[in-house]
Length: 513
Image 1 (cartoon, rainbow, N blue to C red):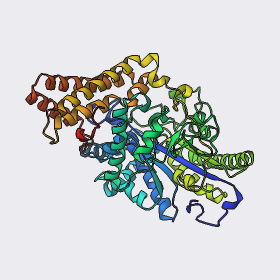
Image 2: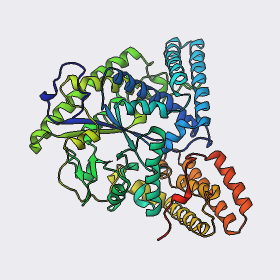
Image 3: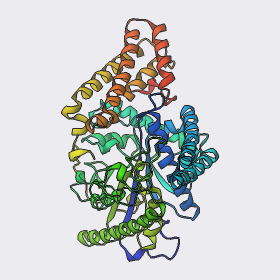
């Protein structure tokens, strides 16, 4: 069981079972690919609003002697951006601009908003300059080494694995775990499978890669998420998200971020780019929303912390009674909900992680749950995801059939070209082969189909998919024509924009069988 639980009196015996919070941190590769409205701005907003305050919350709690607070997924492609020199420089500039925009708001008459934002920006700049200027890896490693968190890994570029060629699927997962080891000195045993996508047989690949547990959505386990389940005939355990508890926080109809006192995400002050309003009401137009009041929002945080703790307690008690043994409750969310989408989310997190053990709830990680025996009978896990319908429609439906076909073409072309290049190579590393593979994995990122299906910057998503596909095609064409100097020049040009994972080595891709 987790040792973090109290900090005060040990009241764990008052509630059976364990609560686990899982956060999934991910953005596609955005560096060098546009700025506004979609592009690097998305990265910097999420960094400032979510990653900086989350790390600060976890450091604060760890300094109090608390451990095993949550399971934190950080995708390799996000980790690459948070360590990238270009992104680090851009982020520092963005933070300075944020404070200037706050000062501009004050000078234009909105003193309350300007003062609030100036304080937040100044704190973020000081934190970034002290802890983040050499990349995020030291920040996360400090928390991992302190056992404040369990790190969850994943495949390199966050592909929708069920639709991916098995050779590339195996490569992306193995290299993603190796990337984590390189950055943090720790190889994750657990992963957040991209989009919680699964198809039978993947458990064998997980076992071969050393993965012992992964996340699925609740319906994949037929709604019974009170224990993890070994998948098919493997020892790899699937843990399911408890929707009843998770939806208390993030539900379009009734989740906490939609409450009237919280800052409204969608309404901007166009002169400064700041968000001046509180939600006020779901049918209230932007210009008619009431001004944001941090004190009023803080009171709402305290109220919703109490509600969540009561919900978790009741769920643990009722589910433990139902199954006749201590139950597991897993709540899982995108990290970017906390701060970026929900301004007060980091405050809520810090208070919840203190309040749960004070209320007699044992808090631990997925690894804790597995070690403590929160594991039931095997499950014949079927095709599933955490997307709409809990099936694959978001990534394989009619609206993205062109992207599915594009991905198949690009992967086939890349693998065929790499196989042919291998027969003519001298065994040395080849930057042309590496970049060809790098562009292929960027092309199959699950984000592009998701953004199209959800009509969220769909044009940008299609452009990105086709841009990386174009890179694969023109490098492969030069190789096929024997124009090696041109292929080298093209690869170097694409590497300037897409230079993530510099350790990526195409020689480690398994040969065709």
